[in-house]
Amino acid sequence: GGKTITACAISEAASLLGKRTLLVEANINADSFMNVKAVFNLPNLTYSLTEIHHNLYAMSINTSSSMEEYVISKIKSKFIYNKIFNRGFIQHLFLAVPGFREMFLIGKIYWEAKNLSRNNFDIVVWDGPPIGNLELYLKVSDIISHLVRFGTIHNDAKAIEAFITDEKNTA
Image 1 (spheres, rainbow, N blue to C red):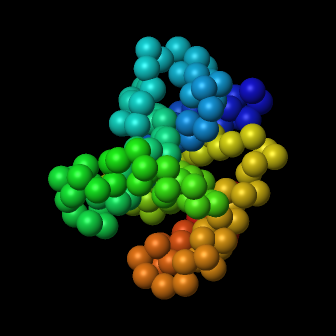
Image 2 (image 1 turned 120 degrees about the vertical axis):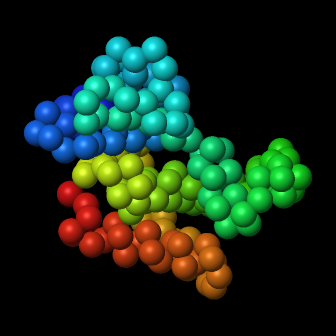
């Protein structure tokens, strides 16, 4: 819809102004997954970077891939992830906690934005959830940091919250 068209237009304009731009689509439902792909007439849009044209890249993120990347970054072992976390029961348990699904998605966007220098991006544009759900995504890091009172998840949630609420980082 209009939100996706706006995100694509902002991304396109930034790239044409010489800004190396990443357009991130949160794969929240099947319709949103198709929108960026359709706007730019892409054959596919995945969790990996897709070059649309000079200075413009896109990716589609989803909860399960974001969770896998996050957990592996913390435990430093894909083998252990596959043996323990890559089980249906554990994934359902992890995602049953209110806010964790949203936290993994917003965490991935945070990671891409915070690590702009990794791919030399100047700007990250997020084609986020429907406007009615946006507030949850913007508040989830605060919610999770209060639910989980210490440790890595708490610290990461606090870092995301600080990043989101800093006017230098968001527009």
